[in-house]
Length: 241
Image (cartoon, rainbow, N blue to C red; front, side, top):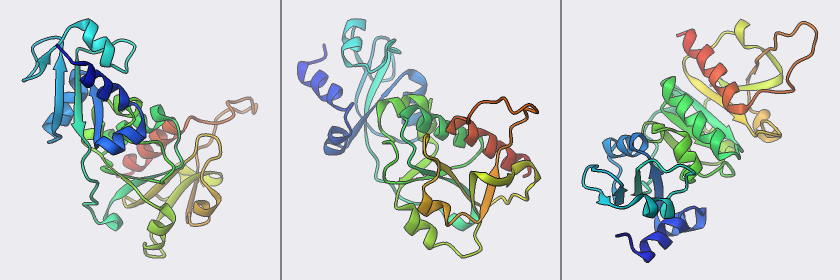
């Protein structure tokens, strides 16, 4: 039986300040939890309504009390938040930089997209949504275990790069991505859902790209969702590989 104190702790982890204080986050569902376990994440608590590893058995009713999902997925784990450590030479890889992404679903989906296209590192501005928000964790569908996400001051990071290092960004005044030379190393910057890439970061972009629309009559959607734009951009980079 799960205790009231356990329920209180788990529910408190919906808020960033509590996750930061406790050094813990919640993951749900066999797929997400399996991927985290295989990646070496350490569970502090593991609950399941069925036989699952060495999980504590709980009832469906108890799972509903601790789950953040409308339809709980049998397994819930509380993991320790690992210490972020940069493990690559940036200039030898293709990476993503997220400038002010606010929607947890978008962030989680972008992490999943990066995983699919073999991009192992994402740099997030300090005002980007929290990686360990339950909605972000769920949206990654386990890719949180495969992609290293580092929060940093993007301006300072970009200023440490060689002057000629490719910094790509999708902008309305950019050049058609399908007609530009694309390298297999560089940083692809994706901006805020409403405001796009910030002015300060935009000034450092030296490879301005545009995802063109294909409506001849001009009647089209106003813009692309940032996660979809990320998928299109990453796909085109990898297609050239």
